[in-house]
Amino acid sequence: MDGLACFGNDPSDKPPCRGCSSNLVEPYIKCAECGPSPFLLCLQCFTRGFEFKKHESDHKYEIMKSDFPVLEPGWTAQEEMALLEAVMDCGFGNWQDVAYQMRTKSKEECEAHYMKNFINNPLFSSTLLNLRQIEEARTADTAIPFKPTDDPPRPTFDSLLSRDMAGYMPARADFMEEFDNYAEWDLKDIDFVDDDSDILHALKIAVVDIYHSRLKERGRRKKIIRDHGLINLRKFQILERRYPKEVQDLYDAMRRFARVVGPIEHDKFIESHALEFELRREIGRLQEYRRAGIQSFCSAKVYEHVKHVREDERRKRTMLVDVLQYIQDGRACQQWLSKQAAIDAGITPVVTTITTSATGRRSAPPLNLTGLPGTEKLNNREKELCQVVRLVPGAYLEYKQALLNECRRQGGLRLAQARALIKIDVNKTRKIYDFLIKEGYINKA
Image (cartoon, rainbow, N blue to C red; front, side, top):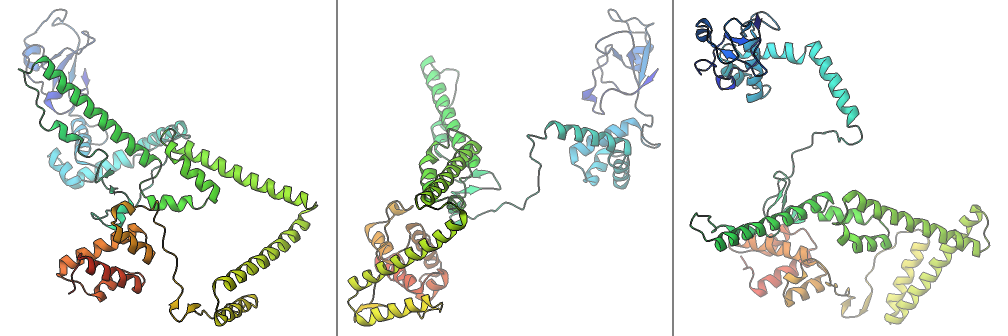
């Protein structure tokens, strides 16, 4: 009886001969009566009539070989198995290495045979299609289809994008600086040797357990950041701004509890409260209509229009009172009244500068740095500069580092180079440049 060899081409995959323990080479003999484990013999032991325990020389047998065609003439079963193993090892499409591993077929023959019998074969394709449809039906509620994406961003070290992403490297799916970044230092000098005492051995085991707990905490924090989309903080803040002010405050207060629940549950919680806020606001508006005696939506539209007109008039009177109170200048008041008249008439007003006296333009109030990121990295003089220039600390630190790097590279820096490097208001750039020169951070070219 002839049969297909049940093992691969690698001799190590086949059990040895039960008679001489040598590696089996096709063709070889398989006993058809002994089992359940296969009883295999090489041809030499079979011709000698080898017997062992329950196996006798007159048992029925099968000749195991794979030199017969399976799918098409010219390709034996052994070569079919070798082709599949080579494609698995070298990868689909790498036909040059596949042919080199097979050694009996050319690159063109391997590609043509594989595409014809394993890719474009109607029998195989229909079977794979049915299996794919069954798998999709089974995982229709949970599976997320894969979609190819662009190459992930690869921000350079200490760039603006890298700081915005908190040092996250998408290509590696890891952070440049991990939480508890030096946890491995406690293990670098630990060495387990045979002559350690029990107490020392237990102490080393405890240190390793502590390190494992720190790794778990690191992984937990990274999972929270990834699940909740906190890597790009600027994008996260933009998404927050789509909510009303009350919901934003709730979002900010509940962010610390996001680690307790998953991202979907947290978003549902915020969305439900945003919906509750909208419903309460709508109910309050309907109650206001009822108190005003309005019973139809047409009347409500008229009421809203008149209400807006009344609020605009009140706001204009308030602005006029403020101007007359704080600006004791007839010319400035006349300019402001002309501007308001142009606005009411639907004409674009000519922007003029309102001055308090001959000293010049009214200055804007200083910027409040309380709670802004990066404030703790500034000294008192730098804080004063950011307040006067009205520049957030994060942007100032970025501009400062850019100017320092350019100054070190050029050996000095001119104001024109600073303005070309920092694309902001030229007056702010001049103040930053003069401040860094005065404090000794950079040198003039």
